[in-house]
Amino acid sequence: MNLRGPQLKVRGDFQVSATVHRPAGQTASLYLYGEVPIVYDEWRQNRRGLRVAVSERELSLTVWDGRSAAPVADRTASVTSPATVTVTFERHGGDLALSAGDTRVAVPDPGIFDAGSVMFGVDAVPGAPDWTLAALEATARDGGVAVRDTPMTGQSTQPSDSLRGLAEATGRRLPIGAAMAAEPLVSDDGYRALAATQFSMLTTENALKPQFVHPGPDTYDFAEGDLLVDFAAANDMKVHAHTLVFGEANPRWMQQVALADRERVMTEHVRTVVGHYRGRVAEWDVVNEPLSPDDDGPDGGPGLREHLWQEAMGESYIDKAFTAAHAVDPEAKLYLNEFGAEADGPRWDALYALVVRLKGRGVPIDGVGFQSHIHEAGDHIDPAVLRSHIAALAELGLSARISEIDVYGESPRVQATQFAGVLGTCLSEPTCTSFSIWGITDRYGSTAEHDSYPLETGDELPWDQRLHPKPAVAALRDTLRTARR
Ligand code: XIL
Image (cartoon, rainbow, N blue to C red):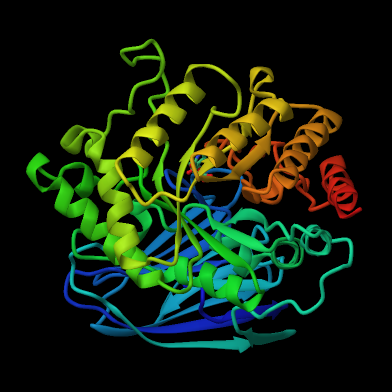
């Protein structure tokens, strides 16, 4: 998807003509999205949109209405198309139609562009010769079309009761963050307004995970990460980048690297990605979730999580990752991020013991992120216990942060109490450097049932699906107001 490209605003009927140069054997496919697809790491949910495709012998129009993974219409027609060909898509008289020369296919329009915008994307086959989009032309048939640049500009005014505004007014000036994604930022004005006005810190939700940023051994793709970082800069937000080294979200090629080459691959990855963002990213999750999810360690608590890096280097992969990141950007604050360590018990003990060892070996670690995912009753966070963990880290010279809080499956009241309790804890501990939520609105939350159509959204975030504030927002505001006094 051309996230940064221009969008069309459409009213009434319109047409879009695309001229493509197509190497022999290639199919050129162009997407017109009425709604941006929702892309998380392991899945993609197509919403309203369509694909127009042309090959040597076939013209095809495929339409998704957002109610199913399968298209609602898929029409093809035989054509003999030259290497350079112009195909014309139109919305006309209640139909969607595609034509090339005298050949035309049409289907009834289920309302693909009713929201009034068109965004563009293309498909290509990795490794195959590129096809080229030589021209793209939009014409109004009735109503109108207008081109609008990707809406990425800074939002000038913040309401005085915004979370970031209230946090600014406390002596602490604690950054209030949220994990954010590129697709809703460019396609959803309400989401973008909340992002820019409520938060003073941006965590890259998925865009800098290895499988997005490093899709091939010699291929880095910084497009989405750059978009997020630029959005943050335009809105005076700090960037917390997530994540360099992780057992999950690694591209297949990386998972298949021979044992002997893994250290080189990992450190090159760290150097390249940190180097690309030097000076623009304030902090990194250098290692994410180093502990095993199970109590499988020698002392009955969790051992190290087994994965490609741990398998090749043992615990020293952590030292090496931090050392490589620090060498490239000595200014950036470097974090180790973990879940389930907010409460007392074997997970906290194992995490504490790990950071003691890291500090003992002189590893350049600045702090620990407490993910604070509250997804079942047993996850409820006791502010006093969390406070004692933050204080224990401070004794070691380490900062802490609340990195990914969300509260799932609770009444709005209980949710509000959990959010506010953890924020209050962070505000009260001088070494707690930021409070960051794992998303903004349930419209795009990470607990959505992604293989159901339409998307079955979760309920873990402070703003609901309609972008209305839930009681959690008022509770967070009250907590910030109290801290001010
Ligand atoms: C989640 C993302 O939010 C989803 O979009 C993705 O499909 C799976 O990963 N802990 C982490 C994050 O550190 O990387 C995870 O993010 C949530 C749990």
